[in-house]
Amino acid sequence: MFSKEEIAQRIAKEIKDGYYVNLGIGIPTLVANYIPKGINVVLQSENGLLGMGPFPFEGEEDADLINAGKQTITTLPGSSIFDSAMSFGMIRAQKVDLTILGAMEVSETGDIANWKIPGKMVKGMGGAMDLVASAKNIIVAMQHINKAGESKLLPKCTLPLTGVKCIKKIVTELAVLDILPEGGFKLLERAPGVSIEFIQQSTAGRLVVEGEIPEMRLD
Image (cartoon, rainbow, N blue to C red):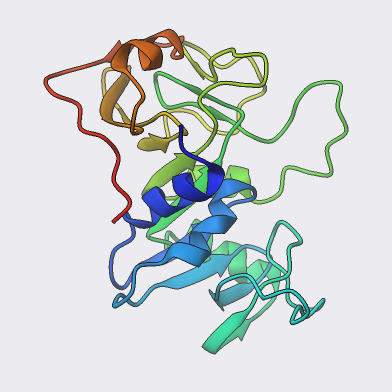
């Protein structure tokens, strides 16, 4: 199975030259460390920043530079800092080419639940609802199964929804999957050493397997 870092590394391969990319809280923030060399990408954070770099080395953190998840970050030459009103204006005007979000659940029709577990304290919904309503392309970075071994890829989400029919692709510790227009998780790639049978057992929603399924590669 892939680690969180390897999930982020695989998603980084989806980023194209010239993209403006928003990285959500959790695994998506790790993607900043794996941007392929030779491509020009601008990372956007909804708290008001364009031009995020990798995470700082220990001892080089600046407490005034944080992402939306309140993690310390670095900035690149030419970066820009502004208020959240302008940031959300960019998001709502669809200026962001790719959004990478974490999720607690995703349904086979592309619904996402990633902001609240009933009964548990939540600091706020953050920017997720604006992102899923406005983003042109959304990839989810998430765990395929929870700590109890239960699937998080479901026929229908059980947690409060963040967005409906908005997810295009999912990368987990087990697989890369597309959401089909008619509904269902189409298996594209599997983690090295992980069998199709295990992915089927770990996916509660409808899983579509067609032809040979290659192993996920990070190079």
